[in-house]
Length: 369
Image (cartoon, rainbow, N blue to C red):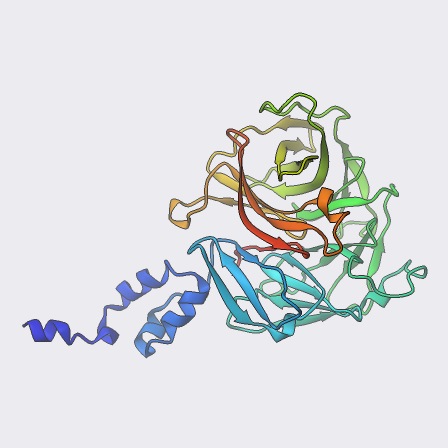
């Protein structure tokens, strides 16, 4: 009997047990699971991920990229020659790449087994760029999809370009279309929220562009944040100097619109604090959010979203997972200063620095594949 047990054929394990095991693997390990044998491959769940991935900074333009998985707390490497680029942005699990010569491509989640690349019009197909003699890596600030191209052929793409312009593209079009705005202020962020693109500018005005309405290329001011925002809940040393590093808009897991301000402490050490406000566009009111309960936010210069936390995923509830570029250091260093990822605990205002890097910002990839 002992020899029979030792000689067990692992390929004959019950399919329901194999499927249960595969559900607890991150995509990289799931690929290895499938490669064991045919029975394991057929029993494995379809490719999926319900936790975010963090794409780390590029190293000397090499085609191999590193990804940090919050679920298994490991760094995975993958050969991705198709994403060798200067700029990276992410939305709904897709990555927008910008090359040195101004070419734009959308790539389905880099950790996916299946390569799916969509070419978008180049940078010289944007309107109102006559004063720009050449393509600059900072030309694009944000990239947003209305829907995933794999599930909706009617998806739309919105970008912030040249710091203060909104550009719209739809499949089949050969050029980008500028969205008229009532303000000349630079734009912090833009998201797709309840059927419209919603943006926030440097005067904390909320703009909305209904691309399926009667004026699809016009953004209108729909809310003005109060001049005096609520005080921070946690105490900080008197006389501390803070300035706004980043402002993000996020749709919460319950469907509300969140305004999140990230402030950086002007000091030699890395210190951040966050203010979270919920905006009701119908009542024209905003209220401070002091507890996210079983939800956490994932914020970045290139991608922001919210997730309901599952205890099996090693993600902490009532926290803000954020990527940062230290503005106070970037102006003194040629390589762009310090970058990294931190975890802000909304309950007590403490910050854990989790991943550190240099030069280019780290990139959140949303779990939707």
